[in-house]
Amino acid sequence: MLIGIDDTDSPQGMCTTYLGAVVARRLIYEHMQVREARLVRLNPNVTYKTRGNAAVALDVAGDTDRAFEISCATVEELADFACDNTNPGVVVVEQPPDPGFYRQAVRDFCEIGDAVAILDAMGARYRGYKNRRGLIGATAAVASRLPDRTYEILVYRQPVRWGTPRNVDSASLFAAQEATFPHTWDTIDEENDVVVCVPHTPDPVLFGIRGESPSWVMVARSMVASEEPAIEQIWITNQGTDAHLLDGKIGNLKEGLSYRVHGTVASVPLTGTGGHVSFTIHDGHHDVRCMAYEPTKGFRYRVRGLVPGDVVIAVGSYKKGSINLEKMKVISLANVPATRPPLCTMCNKRMTSDGKAKGYKCKKCGARAGEPEVQEVPRVLADGWYEVPPTARRHLAKPLCRGVPDIKQGYHLAPPTSMQQ
Image (cartoon, rainbow, N blue to C red; front, side):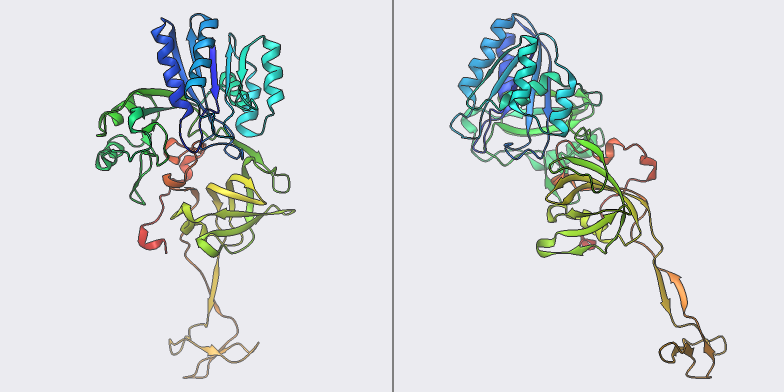
């Protein structure tokens, strides 16, 4: 069977992955076999999500009725029902639903009625609490297919420590990433010298290590020094896969969806209040604004290096008329000409302007020239991909260390801190 659970947490605490890990252990205690634990991130632009919009699915062999009973009882025990925005859902199916529902949930929006219709047609066991919105994520989780998959080991705190400051040695996290990158990623943000994998919210997670395989995340995890954990779980995930992205066209973008959009830079990037950088791209018919917000730090330096005429692929979510950049590819760079007065061939001195439309004149010998000297301005950018730093990366966004379809075009790091100003 597949067991799906969603929407059990709140900003004040709990975590659906922790609850799923507890369910897995209670099923094993009753002699059931948990063959796989899956963490599925869904559309990151859903407004009513708590944090990362995650649902979980467990692949289990055992008594279906008993598994459903244990799953519901655990949700009723641990979910944060006091939060108005917490509306859990539990689903148990003996066969996975059509994966189209998962694809819609990760790239678009779904309705509760759509999930219920699928579950009823399958004769599934399910239970929704309060407004039952968690049935959407729970159904998407059991319907998920992950042709590209990554892994995360999540280490959970002892319940008596929830809500207190976490004790994780930051030096050990830096050492773990140095030893295992690029096989693991986003443990720390080296450019900005900060830890990424330790949350600051009052939930049960102590830290998490993401990587390409169970063995690599375990290698990194073994290097981390921390407070004594309660339980740990390795999850198969769609994190870091770009599963949320659609190929989009300027003028035909839908609010709340995430796209790859091809266009030509139409305006000089401008830095606004708060350090946010904006510019416009067009496709010959329509324009759209692209935004690199202040939390993207050094990535904004690269964005500021764009000029009109550069051809790019902008990648990010379309919200309130803007593409909020997660990464971008520079396909081609425009030539940026600069002019200056020509050199006098007799005196080897720069001429000066002789007035509007009158050309240039050498002050020393009186020689004249009609045209300025034209030279190409060096660019700070090169062709290739650029990405936001780990501190600003979304769960689903694919880091460049995992590769891109044409990674040979280049893998560019953000500039040193001194160049970010």
